[in-house]
Image (cartoon, rainbow, N blue to C red; front, side, top):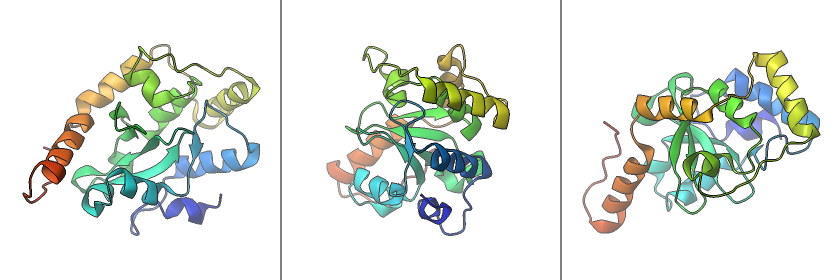
Length: 195
């Protein structure tokens, strides 16, 4: 995937953040899954539009950069016109469940990826699911790359990152529930500004 392909997932006036560009270069070099089933994704703008049932107002609040094989999405939540450097990283579950703010920064998200969870978003939101972990040579090399490039290591407790992010931002699952209620429960004008 080329940088221009990834750039299509972002609003026209928003550059692809440099750490994300570095991860793209890494992914292009290894040509393999390096953390569970996660990979960067060039169809994020279209995927999030369909995730929100073609509601452009809702979809435009997200810059989706990654996915996993079940169709779950990862991206920046650009709520209240946030720039990507101040936007949290979120998980949008493939079945509309488990939606959560995962990390305050992209670097924190990279630390979570270093865990090698097969389905990272569900692993942290639905611990009762046994999503599995892939600990293999690709994950080991990815971990080495993270330390070398960013001085990032896998956290000993992923909950600390997720809970800090959740408390610093609006409740994503609640925001989505309000969106769904307004979209399907009534004909009122949709106000999608988190408080």
